[in-house]
Image 1 (cartoon, rainbow, N blue to C red):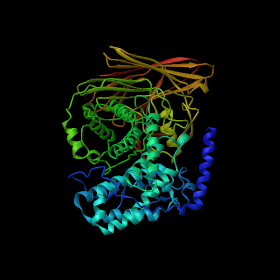
Image 2 (cartoon, helix red, strand yellow):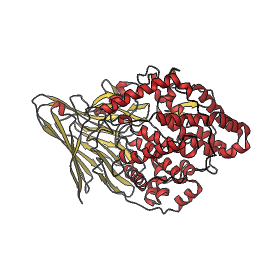
Image 3 (tube, helix red, strand yellow):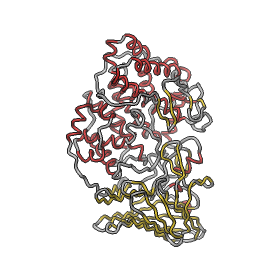
Image 4 (cartoon, rainbow, N blue to C red):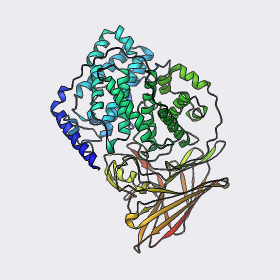
Length: 631
């Protein structure tokens, strides 16, 4: 930690101690100078299931019942009602804080508002009022875990902005005296208090990753929409941060530097919604901002396989900014490409956006849907994209509905010194065939609880690369903290008519006296991938080397001989993997000692999967050859 950051942390601690004593002094009146201008759209008729349930990491929350806002509903434990910043959120002693925060994002409120917009049933309006009042009563300022994280505060702000629009609050204020009383005495003061908190607790230094983007987006949207006394300050600060961070946190070609693919859709929504608010309030973002947003969409477009799957890399906690009816926008990447096609009037985004979903109906309305439908559908061939600067190499060969997609990772560990959401996956790869994942990154599973599982899923053994002496490529310093981050080097990039070759190295094992170099060569004519590992050793000690290949749970795997395997998916092509004769290979699935052979399809969910596991012990430098044939 740098000296300036240490100084900042001391100041923050001092500020929190002041707030602990004076927290009851922060009681905003919630007065706005005028009603907000309508910025979003109430969708026309659509079908919905009339239920009062919402999925929280695969577990059901009933929001027509009384909600304990401090309860981890999975582990059935409660977080204490004490000063927010003194609560232990990391050890698991109080439960899993992510579960509590997911409930308290209040994203199910948009479902209630959508149902009201369709039916005008006052029961939905009363339910909305009851939930807001319940939340406010149970969460006095800076008491309890729901004021601990500023990103959660700002997700609530953005969802309340959407709720206000869907309820058409401006109309209700003129026609419903009871609702007007609720808005003026309860909801608006709560919104202003959230804006106050978002402004006061900015993430800085090693914490200024996606959290800072969320804070700036929430501030800008709140200030632009509601005319509170401090709204001009919120707008100015939020916009300044967003303009800076969209450039700072992305490579020149639009790749997010956190090195977590699922976070891309999460972060992009913050930038997108703020952009639309700025455009519709006459406070437009710069051309540079818009061009960077377009590059982000372009990376998403090429990151997808032919079926719309985005391969995992880095952390994934299922986080979304907006979540209408739970799974309605489950593939938020496709939803974002639909937004991009409207925003930039480009058919190639529509090719993979495909449908005009409910989220886009809210953001763009009937005019946006008409524009989307009028865009011509083109049969676009998505060729390989070799992002040398970002270190992601998307190697593709497509023939009608058949596609070979090899993703090679020669990227940094993550963003900033802590690389919070990166995994130790240097020189790893994944392989999708005909729109199905075959060789995969196993996912994330957990953050702050179950530390052994957290260490496994983010560690090197859970990735398709070489592990040395049982060590990760970098040292885990905590659930969201890496120490002695490795550096990667891109040594060779060739793309011609017959092949694509990518060669890279990393220095994560320098501490062991070992250097790992790896090259990938894709034979375009014969659909063969060759992986060449060079291990350079500068001592005479024996070292243990492990080489895993993680398969998707839907993949069938047969071991044909000691080092030859056949993998396939129903109705898709077979893939043959031939490993180096020096290796001892076996199939492992669902092992708990040691942890190996697991796949996490969603946060807090895991299942056994097959891993082709190779191990050897030797001295000195050597090389390994792996061949993957797609037939």
